[in-house]
Length: 284
Image (cartoon, rainbow, N blue to C red; front, side, top):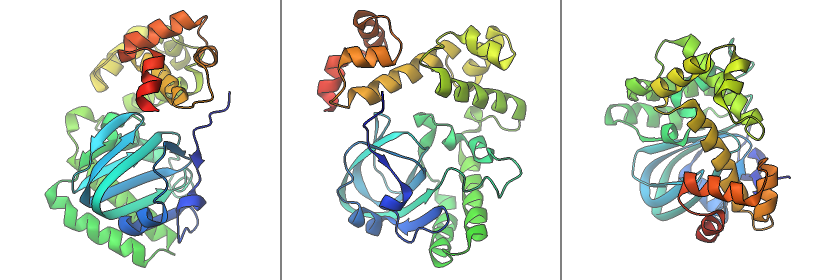
């Protein structure tokens, strides 16, 4: 099954796009992309910082009220839509998945930042007042030096570090590189195997650790069990497929490797609180 949720490419939405990155004022970006209000995916990283405006935006079916100084981050593949109200302003940055890879010794370095975890609860927050002036000045300079790719990379990394420092450190892995790498590998394995592997012990075996170790890590960092992390990823994919009109419930159940529709419906209702049909009617 090939997902028919539109995948938006960088060149489609970005003006002044140069060698993998675009930095633009929000007002101009929205004016050029005013029809892009339907659910869609990106094949690039996307961050948006509101300095004024209202309304809502939705990432992977989690809806957030827009408030000034709120920032959100999106990783490739996440589903996104918005409904903005009033005069919007701020900054938008789009950059390709490999934008930092040849620049840094550690290719997956940006995944160390909590807001690039792919978990929606980590991706949306308000920038603290003491950092706002610094970050806005950097965004302005980035627009002026759009051709200097090294300056863009260094500046964005500096912004990421400023934002990471203001996060609740109790939810971040701080300096525990081993556990962070372990958790990231677990999430990456889920992304590749959630259709066929559903048990924590299967992922623990791939990570060469015990299921108890994996569960303890997930509870400490994510506040939930390893099994729940796996189930949530399956449910997310089910939701993504349900917003596509062309797919029947039986097709989605088959795509997600459920034996029959009734088991899929029971699994979905237990996790979401409504049947797949009810979810589809609500979101279409």
